[in-house]
Amino acid sequence: MPTRRFEATDDGALDALYADVAEKNLQPLWELSGLLTPTPTVRAVPYRWRGKDLRDLGERAGELVPVGRGGDRRVLSLSNPGLGGAPYATSTLWGAVQYLGAGETAPAHRHTPAALRFVLEGEGVWTQVDDDPLHMAAGDLILTPSWTWHEHHNPGATPMTWFDALDLPLVEALDAVFFEPGAGRTAEPATPGRSLSEPSTPGRSLSERHFGGGPGLLPGGATTPAPAHSPLLRYRWTDTDRALNGQLHDSASGAARCGHAHVRFADPTNGRDVMPTMRCEMHRYLPGHTAPEERRTGSALIAVFHGTGAVVLDGVRYDVAPGDLIAVPSWTSQRVVADQRLDLFAVSDAPVLEALALHRTEQIPATTDVL
Ligand code: 1HN
Image (cartoon, rainbow, N blue to C red; front, side, top):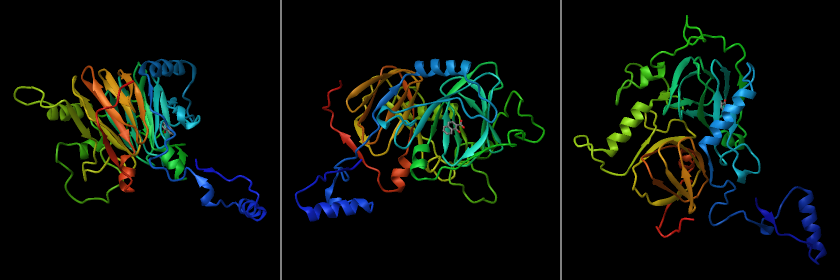
């Protein structure tokens, strides 16, 4: 926040000017400081939430707090200690864990902030996005783009938790939040003749049957106007895992060719990011691999899917284990160390920074001591 330097002077005319300027809700730029800084002033701090705490607290909330119809979501939001108590993980990203007990339903609603789910463990919940039911299993990425209806169902006998990310702080800063509860919609079956209490979802969602048929295969025939988001709404772990291994290993011998593989989840029709405001990526690091330290504008959240190691942020080492969630604020230097094979899901606001030509990266020379 810029601050004002002005203090009373012994010049009466000048003091009167400043008083009149303030009275008219104006501020003299020449008296302000902290407005244009050499590098970004970032309020959010690097932070790690432990998977064990998130699981335990989600479970306790599951026992004590019902998800009522007409109610909303049983969600524990990541509240970055640098953001003054706001329920935001970074200045642009909402991150959370959501817990849905056996037999529970989180009713339909829609909002302009876009959301995505990355499933850290378990299987069996299905999310309906508009009229398309999407099965959720560990390692899957599920999209609920801006203004799509969505509801979650857990027809199974075991509770499930997953990682939610939304662009809510960004959309809020742009004064563009709209929300609509789904009164009357929840009762609509996903497909004619199907009941919402049906215990299973079709093997493949409509979006996967059309846009996930196979590499390089898109539906032929007339093209409809492209939506602002990927028409593929579920990215399956089996596909992500195969893509990562394909980059890492020699197909004949199985030997590792390099120590780091990295895929970006893309709109299959044009290669763009899955949604206009959020980029999703999956990284696989092999033990012993050392990646260069770098920083970038824009913030990210990391979800640890498999393995152990450390994420080093601004020289501070955060040991990580499955289920941990990490906030990486803008212009924070970052380096990853793998003790075991480490799979990290990352969501960032990079498409926004790129669209606005504000994207910058910097490689940090390898001299920083790790605390
Ligand atoms: C929301 O709609 C979901 O649908 C999860 O699962 C988290 C956080 C803020 C606002 C809306 C969901 C949310 C949310």
